[in-house]
Length: 422
Image 1: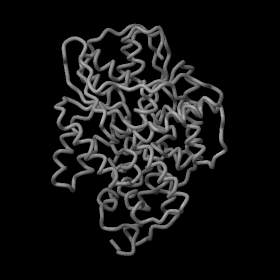
Image 2 (image 1 turned 90 degrees about the horizontal axis):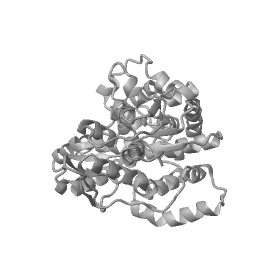
Image 3 (image 1 turned 180 degrees about the horizontal axis):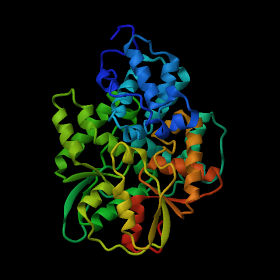
């Protein structure tokens, strides 16, 4: 590698992984940015070509960074690739390099400081919550720059804050003892999802431990190249859950689960943490994945309802969990599950992509919303808070508002015998 190239010596995109790409093009129809623009350098194989150029001495130019920034990190290309190219490893390594070696504009730095100084910190979000709720109830809309406006428009409707207890006993004979990730945005803006998760797990015979002191899992930081920050978050979370002696660590946010399952890789260079991280990661399960593995004991009551199921990218592509949520929904009597056209294409949320790249995200959101509306379903179901916010906004923008729910909320409604979800 040339010393004048784009990359430094700290985990550059690995040449052996770059060489796995044979530039066949199978990734192209599944890549959201290539679908939108048809630009080769905004496709996975185009970005892989640029990574190779960086090894060959090409400097890290603004144009090169733009193409990397436009990637959603949805990993649909990983699913589609017949050669097994580990694009997830490549783009994460590349983004870490970009964060260290590229000098962003002051506007970009300011926005990133705001986002990463707020979203991974539940206490900060909690302090802002009453103000945000009052702002929503007032009906006011303050004109803001495009990226701040995107944050304002994505905010879900805020009701009273819902929390879960640190310990919930199993209903009936105990079948498992599980730890539960509370999340950051999930905890403060989607507390109903956490509450439903606890009820479902308890109904299925699980003792649920949800330590209130737990912090961020580091998913946003990891996926955006802020490696030191993600390492710090990961260590704290591992240390929080290690003493609890749980059989599994259950996660109900797809992006968080994908990051936590990757802790062994993230901490591979740290002798004191590598084995602990692997042990932790081996216990991480998406809530749908865990419930299917556990098997049902609680009675499902009928829900005569048609739902459209949206695959969250970090559940379907990053974790490979596709059938479990559909199995859970299909087991609910009277529930009809409808598939969405272009299911592999991201909705445009992608963590904080819809804040940093609002125009592209809006195009993808509109595309997804049109396909969701075409199903004629009464409810959209998915497994990630970012998707819920993004698709809600896109459906509202096109004038077809629809009820949106997490997979576990639908199951909770069935177990409780509710007349309808919500």
